[in-house]
Image (tube, rainbow, N blue to C red; front, side):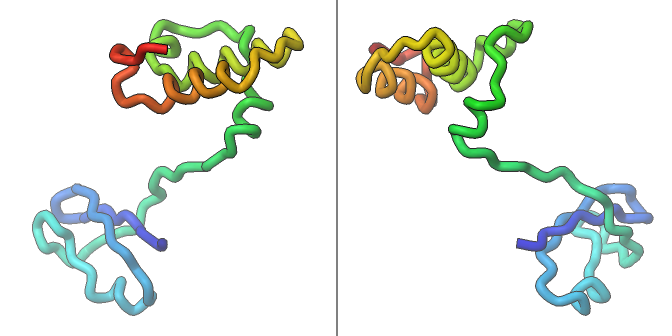
Amino acid sequence: MPIYEYECETCGLLTSALILNPREEETLRCEHCQGKSLTRVLSRFALHKTESQRLKEFNPRAPRDDSFYKDSRNVGLWAKKRSKELGVDLGDQFEEVVEKARTSNHPEDFEP
């Protein structure tokens, strides 16, 4: 979806807008002050990767800070990559446990 961000020249705040037709930009107003003078800005974007792409690119030997280990998705990725590197097949149960832990909203409550 073409969602664009605009900076208001009056109040300096950002406004997001879904623009399906370029003519819609002409009537766009700041959602904060209703100003008409807006400039499109470059906004953040996300690049989605498949699990296999993430696993292929992941380096388990790279140094990590403490925040890395607080995210259960990272720990699961590390476990998968290391088991592959070591040539160890821990079976479907291992994959199942890792996926449960990685996708849990409350990893502290997870019991394998």
